Length: 581
Image (cartoon, rainbow, N blue to C red; front, side):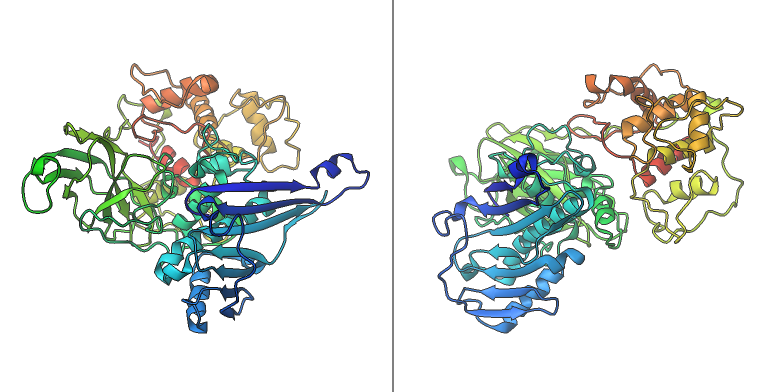
């Protein structure tokens, strides 16, 4: 559901599940309704409008039109083709119909989960309602359709693979994969549409997996009075307080792993950095306050595209990170702009960088007071370069002999930012691929897997085995090495449990690696804004490794480390590559 919205969630059968003697079926019904439609269709679609046309696609999904502007089978076939152009899998079989209603705006998605004590599912014949069809064409409907299908996709796989709903959004792995577990404003009961977890996930789906038409660009060549949240390069996601979906490491792979689907894994562009260099008064065009035409000069660093293709940049401004931005300029290749200014007061400016595949990243926002324009810029990227200070020689790894062949992996292209690191660590025998020839660069790493990698790099020698953990049986593939690591003090566990098959977080990874390297804290180390009291157990390890440049943070208005985020295979390879001579 797009724009402001209210989510009603009814948990039917919950009380009976608690008190009835027989195990009942629990039903979870979701109706996602756009509050702006209340005057037209109060809370639901009308039931008394005549059906104008219908078309049932080969997969059984029926497109129904109640709008006289959509009255031909050919038009509805176009909607069907647009629907299936979004990434989809077996969940599509549970979608029954898409309805086009004449008035209003935005959309609705209706879902129903069910569960018993030993099974779960989602009811079939799910419905997507698209409103305002009298005033929309396929180009403008595409993004809303992609968003609504995003609800269908994300609800299905969260429920079927993790037995989790977005009402309880911290259950399962989504909150960690998205990097929002500690974001206090996200709530299933939020009055702000952009902070609803299900809406965030649906927006993410449209960004990462939407159809080409849903991710098309609108070209802005000057200030325009008409904007829409269906414009992908104007509103990649509703809530600009959060990182864009393509900026979150491993997030796309989280959904692909969950769904079992695949897409070409082109890497997202790097984030550009924006500077507003001043204001000029005069020139051609309509006059601003005081009769003068005002301009702002902006320049930004070129974002690096792993695929090497041309990047498109769009300059936007806004006052509210949950509001609708204004589009100013869309260019390809260019890294500076001169734009007319019609507003007063404080505005935020961003530049979005979009690659040819539709993935979008953003510069950090730059705040400018247009009443008193001054030079402004976002903080430059923080850089903690390896070797400053120098790593002790005892922790540096020997490089493979010159010319030693590195395995070739089917999912690691030659232009990826992590290609060199994967080549190095695989040639050195520290990380291997899968039997099908993949490396799985965006796959998360399990705790036992990371321990095995560290122990290959830094063998423990004759350390006496420690006691076994309660959750690591003798038949587990890592039983012996985990006992050896415990005997050497490399791992400690929690209440005699190690959780060997759980995903390792960035904080846990730093602590384990720090114990293996036994580094003394350098004189200078970065201060990460998100490594606070909750991570006192990992703080020294994180800051020590960062001080030597072994691990890096995420630059922005504040330097973050992301201690609760998961660690991914391409990140682990990159970190290890910094330890070679």
